[in-house]
Length: 116
Length: 117
Image (cartoon, rainbow over all chains, first blue to last red; front, side, top):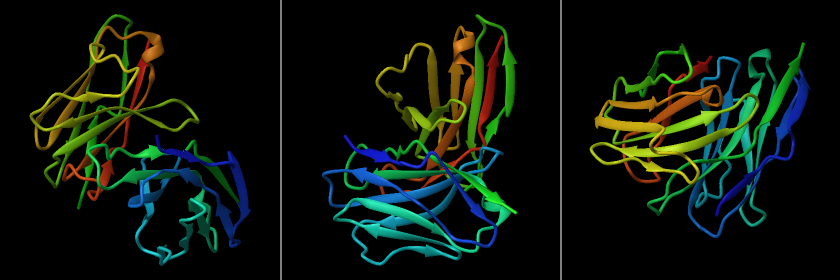
């Protein structure tokens, strides 16, 4: 079974600084998707970034970028120029591609605090 | 595009009664919908996956007779919590996907907070 581990229950960052959230996963699949979701206090899940495992290039979305290390099964999220609105719970998630079981498997989350 | 709504956003019900939560895809046809449960400060736990016109597939440990899921159309899925008890109090989130494969994105609803008194 696939597992996703987020080893940092809480992180904090100063406004305008950079922070990196860690995620590791376990799978025997070669093709899959990895995601970072943001859940602000409103509790609406928001997709931050998606990485396809067969792509070696790390995904980026404006201030958000990932460091995808397939061999190490590591998928960290870097937030640059942190803003107060980035404060939220961040979930790393995994999803298989070629399978009838394509549900999202979530990590336990990292609560990010942004200090002014 | 890809907006998912849930109704109600909050509901309070008495122990022993049933409550229905609706999940709608507003601007796309959702072949597949997912229902999650989230306890405070915890991750999302998948309860069941439903495909339009088929019976839902429940995750291990989820009582299908207690959490009834109906996916009668391509834009609507409902979760009915039957004979609710205080331990059923939780935040319930649905998501919807255009297709049945792993390449299709899941779009999340805003969630429903259920309180059973």
